[in-house]
Image (cartoon, rainbow, N blue to C red; front, side, top):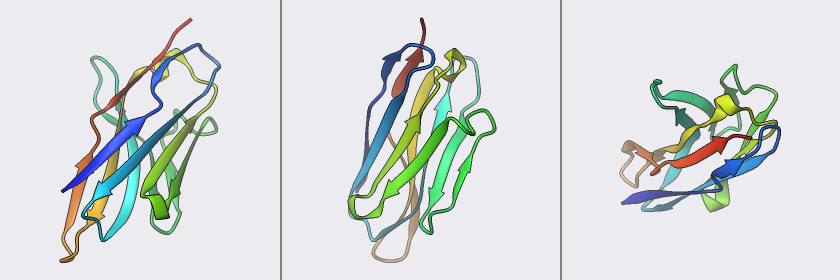
Length: 120
């Protein structure tokens, strides 16, 4: 019913920037929140950044000051601007959306994941 399509991942050198995009489509009444998570090999999946419908944002301590999350509500799209990338940012990044359907139900959806590799 709802799918999240991510783009923007890839291989980048330390200190450079990437912007990830995630567009939600399908039977959506509203999106309460969108966010980005990441999982590196051998590590637990961790929250990177979230943004709620009112515009409030939250960031992991490890990315504060370097990453920015934004949302285009009309396009059901969330962006993650990643600056000053470090090798420890290497992970699979997953987009998440908390979606309200037309009957008032709330459901969490996940993107397929996109690889971000930071290496010299």
